[in-house]
Image (cartoon, rainbow, N blue to C red; front, side, top):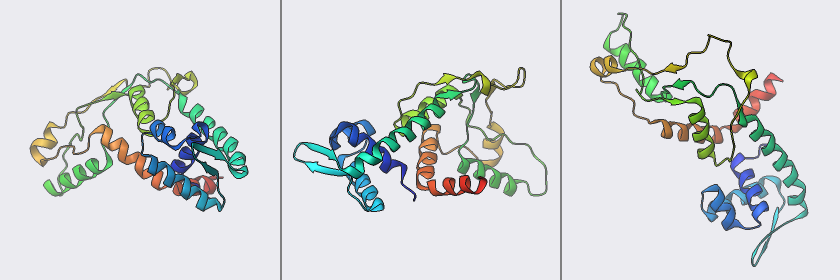
Amino acid sequence: MHLPLNALRAFEASARHQNLTRAAEELHVTQTAVSQHIRKLEDRLGKPLFRRLPRGLALTDEGQALLPVVVESFGNLQRALEKLGDTRPVRDFNFVSDTAAGFLAAAQHAPGRAEVYNLATGRAQTIGETADLIAELVGSRIEIEHDASRDRPADSEVMRLLGNAEKARRELGWQPAVDFRTGLQQTIAWVRENQQAYADAASFKS
């Protein structure tokens, strides 16, 4: 059974606070959104997870059974996210739609002729800054730890990749339309909406 990540996060926060308003404040969403997520989760499971009280919430037996499983799963996910290799390398990230638009513009501009174009934003951030922003956008409280086993071999890491797209702007009229933060927000939204695809891929590999 596929259980939406957002609904599980809403359930865990509501169970911890025993209050929809405080859960909504933590997750940076409305109380209505939290309530809807919980209702969807209850509908999926076919069982109530909370008893609504005049001044808060109380877990049902089913909610009490589910909570430790969710807490452990989130703990495992957080520990996986907390450890990275070298977070100092600097990268210039393009959003996929901007890259595709650049490819199409280049193909239409010089069909049958070889040209080299850089598609880049001209702005860059470290891997550590990227991880921190992702954590912020998904509402996760994590502290990144350096895991030396994930470092690349000595002298193989390029520390700074920052592109200059002036030629693409001048000849193709191309420029990035999606900024870094918006691109991450759209990527996170897509992953949340397509979690089953990841579950199916993991099942296929195993």
